[in-house]
Length: 118
Length: 113
Image (cartoon, helix red, strand yellow):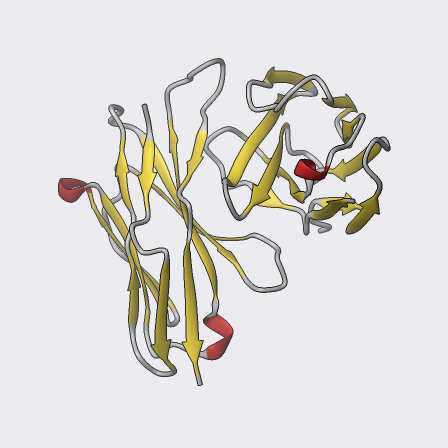
């Protein structure tokens, strides 16, 4: 069964600090997809990134970067020089490529609440 | 392009009333999901439709909950009769294909008094 663990429930940092949000996953599949979503205080869920299991190349998008390591089953998310607008709940999610119950289920972690203090 | 559209944004109603939540997925997306989010349980998948057909409704809490997708551009989630413990934020999401990112609506914040 697939599982996503976000061990950090809440993190507080001071503005301009770097912060890493951890995501550890479990799957028996060799082909799967990993996602990060952001939920700001306004409540909507915003897709940030998708990574498939065959692409271990790290990705950088502005102040955001993602470190995918299959050896440790982790897909960590780093925000560099954090800003108040980064304050949100961040969800990591996993989807196995094989069909379970007729479709590729997506499992979400419980989320990490990030508070950036000015 | 318009994103996933949900209505209403907020709903406050009394216990026992029927509640209907609506969702319009992104055009061309063939997968539609209904989620419920609460502080205690996080994001829970209620039901998944593929090409308008319900594939997995194992997350639907009980018979008071029902969902339909009469066509590719519309889905409803109905609660009848509603109870205070149904209070939550309900999200609809759609994706182009399985394994593709899900795009979420803004959610419906439901309060049952």
